[in-house]
Image (cartoon, rainbow, N blue to C red; front, side, top):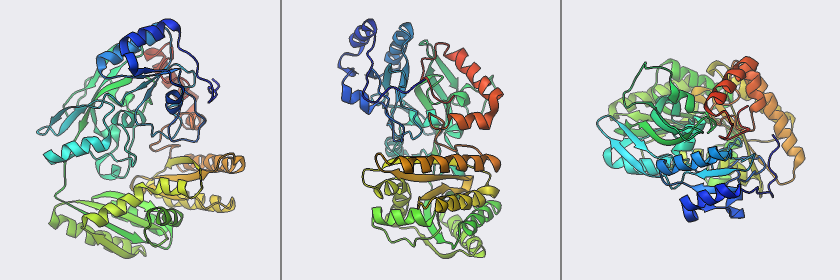
Length: 465
């Protein structure tokens, strides 16, 4: 299916427009600028705007909107905070974009059971701001202040996945609206269940192609008594990854374990006005009691030094911890800032931990062969890393280089027993690579599930496969 040109906004059929206007009033917008804003995320893919944007305020309203679109065979694309990076938000067939930002209520916080129920428009930071008053937090941290509905849709993970898991590990149940307007509930408040098919895991990571999420029940955790952060330098990525493997093998319970290469730290220092040494560095965070953390930090220091790590620096000071993780989370924007008016072009892969150093070093050599200095950052505790390109407007040569490097990166990841994406999802950008990874039979199973739940192919058409 060809992408809708960026300057074309197709129209809703008149009857549907009238019915949606009666239901939503001014919360239905056909404004060209608003439609264009909702036709892309933070990816390099060309915008593809919807015909209209519906700002829904409740599950009941969402159901009515979906039923009307189903009646008129109109495509629907969900929109949260707009932070996706693989083209999940492009409205390839026009249709209706459903903006969930007004559905931003925290419906329940169950401190005794350590769970909460939220609407999909609630953001990660919004939830944690509310939870801290009860001594709880939600740990999944992809960096961007994404909506929780979007995080469910992409199966997001991030800097804390090593300790707390990804969205797949932290969603207890979902309320979801199918393409025909029927609403289902997956899971329950129980921490485990063997009752039937795991529909929740099917929907988490489905990128809005199987159902639209209307409520999410999430696991919560007690805020740790104490948090300590550390960083340690290495002369090579191989040494840094060996230290990571050693810490995991020795069961050091690190909460965050991030690698920034020399290029990423150069970009971060310019962007954040920091002065970190510009060589492979691990950023580490420990959660626990004061007594336990002292032992964890000492063990990590010893293991890093055994792998030629040096200048191991740790801190409990809040300002220093914030500065360190601010730098890590801004690595993407630091990469963008290296090129005036540059457009972000981000890719990720995930490989077995034993293959991580080989994959990163081969990728660095590939970049050097193309005469490119591109930042690499990684959630190295689980084998996931990212390349952060910034491409100037109309620089087709650099775009082609990025595409070639991405192709070789994914082939390398597959050869090493890994996957084409650890956390960004498939969207538009990795459809061909999903076929390589899962095979025709695997894709056929996915298509059969799609056909069963959305036979008219109205939900986010053209994505994943």
